[in-house]
Every structure is written in structure tokens, then in C-alpha cells.
Length: 304
Image 1 (cartoon, rainbow, N blue to C red):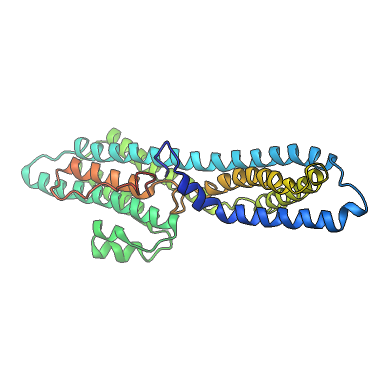
Image 2: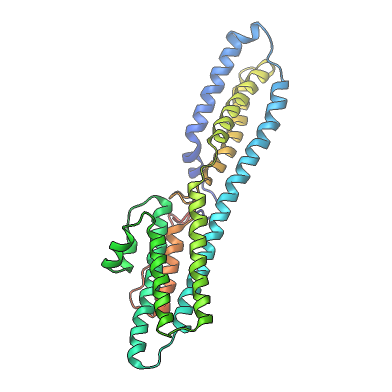
């Protein structure tokens, strides 16, 4: 996720030089085609640009709005996961209690195991959303539990099932009353909802026709603009055609960059940072001594 408020000119050049070069080549070819062939038969009508330009602007605007909605919804989902994760840890620690020291020791083990298991859930969900196979969740669950959850195709859902089983065990042991059991169970339901919403965004493909036709229309506008103004300003039409094409293509590319928010790219949601932040918070809540370092930004520009 981008964290800097300023964009370096070097990053702009790196990100756009290929498109810029292609646009210039297309404009040069369009100008030569017009000079050597087209203008001998007719002047390209300016009304084409007058209609196509505004229509394309609306089309790109709609597409970019939809892309941003996907990105912002994904960010809100993981923001809720941060809050719910902290609440889950607090409730596990302060909503449960036992009558004697022996049972308190057993309860303490279960509390720690349930909080560790939640960290595993987050790492499993992150792996699924990014298509990774890092299996970092194994660090926070036992080998037996790893075997159990890896039998299922949806590992993060299997981990939630283990959490429900553990919660039911605490209730049967009378370590938690009915009201607090309901509150903790609501947290598991929230985790399931947030997991499902994230998976919906990942698995819902944005119609590829939007991208295809938008790019097609941008090239048509670039070529037609070069045709139209070539008769007025000559070879300078290459510059102005390239400029107009660059503006439209770059605007479209910006929307495409946030279309899939869970991809491990600078414009994606910083799942690594968010997961690590939750991990640190929960380990500190448990009073653990080994706390991992926060995820650092890349050149102060973005964080993954």
C-alpha cells in the first residue's frame, strides 16, 4: 500500500515509459499514414474526437470508481479484522476464569492456544488471498492441528472450526458463562464474515471487457486525434496526440492498479503489515517475550 504523499519522478518514469514509448510510436505511424495516404482522399472528421473523448472519459471514470470501491472495501474489511482480533484476545483473557489454581493453569494454556490459533488464521487467510504457500500459520498451531486443517481446502475456515470447538470446551468446563460465550462466539462469526467478504473480492473477477474496450477506445482516440490535428499543425500532431493518449492511458492504468487489492504489489492492501501488527498486538497482550519486528516500508514509499 502506498504510504508516501509525494511521488518520485523516477517512479513515474519507470511505471510509464513503456506505454509512453508505445504511444509515441503509434502517433508517428498515424501521422505518416495520414500524410502519405489518408489526407489525399479526405480530412478525418473532428466530430469523432468530440464524441469519443467525453464518452471515453465517462467510461474510464466509471471503471476507476468500481476499482476503488473494491480496494476500499478490502481495506475496511482488514481494518475490522484488526479491531476484532484485539477484542478477541481481550475477551479470551478477561471473560474466562476457573475456580482453582490447577484449572487456571489449564485455562491459561487454552487461552494462549486460542490466541495463537487466531494468528494462524490470519496468516492462512493472507496466504489464500495472495495465492501464496508460505504456511506461516504452522508456527502458531501444533503439528496435529496442522494435519487436521490441511485436510481441508479452506485452511482458514478449518482453523475457525477448531476455535469453535475450543470455545465450546471452555463453556462445558464452566470457565465462561452463557452471555460471555455468546459474545466470544460473535467474534468468531465476525471473523467468518470478514473471511468470506475477502474471498468474495478475490474470487469475483472484474469483467475483462471493461479493460479490453477501454484500451481499444484509448488507442482509437489517440490515432484519431493525431489524424484530426495533423492537417492543422503538421508533425506537432505527434506530440499532442501522444499527450492525450498518455493522459487517458495513465488514468486507466491507475484504476487497473487497484483493481485486485490483495495482490502483492505496491498499490495493494498491506496484508503483511496488517497481519504483523495484529500478531505483535496479540503477543504483547499475552506478555510474550519474543515479539517480531514490524514490517518496514520499501524506500519510504509503500509497504506490503
